[in-house]
Length: 101
Image 1: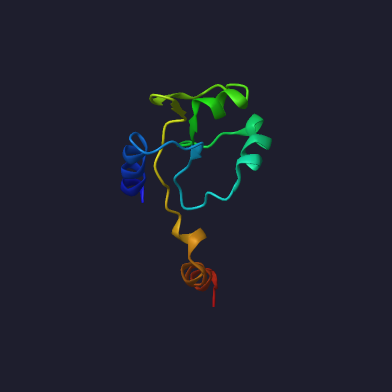
Image 2: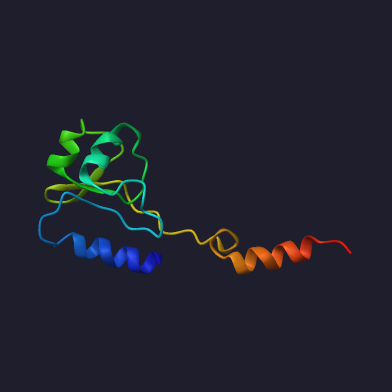
C-alpha cells in the first residue's frame, strides 16, 4: 500500500488542478470540501495535499511543506498494516489462542 501511495503522490505532482488529495486505506475523516474546511483546525493527516488557495482559505495551518508549484502537503508517512484490527478472521484465531482449557 505504501508503494502505491508514493506512486500516487508522484502523479499528483503533475496532475490537473485539484483542491485536495489524501492517500490511505481509511481516509473517511472528511469526504467533501466543506468537511475539510470545517475540520481545518484539527488536521493532522500525514500525506494530506492541499492546493495553495485551499491551504490559505483554511488559515495556512502549520506543518505543511511545498510539494509542487501551487501545492503544499504534510509529508506522507506510508501505511501501517495492523492485521488484527483489519481481519475478523485473525481476531477470532487470536481469541482461540487466549482460551485456556
